[in-house]
Image 1 (cartoon, rainbow, N blue to C red):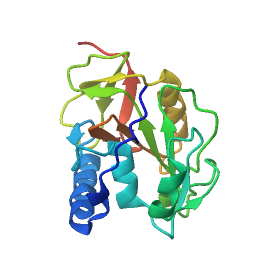
Image 2: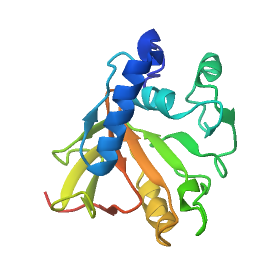
Image 3: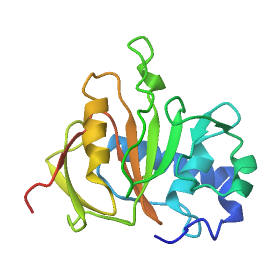
Image 4: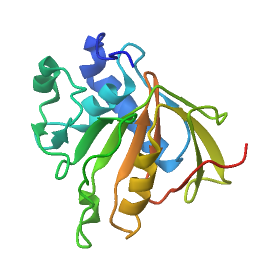
Amino acid sequence: MKNDMAIVDSNIWDPAKQQKLFRSLLDAFSYPGRITQCATASTSSWFALLSTLVDGQTTLADPHKLIEESQWPKLEAHRASPEVAAFVVVDGSRTPEFMPSLGTLEAPEYGATLMLRVTSLNDAGIGTIRLQLSGPGIQKPMIIGVEELHADWITSRNDWVSTFPLGVELVLCDANSFVALPRTTLITVGGAA
């Protein structure tokens, strides 16, 4: 997988662009499984999303070293371990090696948001892994195809959300688009074409 951090759009820090991208992310969480194009074409979608979500008050983990050292000061987030960070960015082709924060019954909103970098996303169900999605915000079960997503992420995620309202949110990101999968979405690996 190529390093998609090589080109970073200097305008990603523009407040208007960040507001537009944040609105797109909110819409994506309202319609799980909908593939959303990133507001910027010259920065990888996962990094663009991070630039809108993190600041000096948030914690961020990067266990697979996807963020270049020179980008940390711009993000301003506090580095944390993936077990306690509010946001975690990972290479989706690798297996999960940690258990993220699931929140508490008193504060389920403290469950982590995991951003998984994958090679590509499509709504034709084509890919190394097919995900069948159903639940709130999805009118009828749908299939998305994902390239280079290790199935263990879905197995672990389903375990992490099994004690709702505790759990995590997933955002699958390829170079130019993303899919939001809230903890209320039912995800099955495979499914009919």
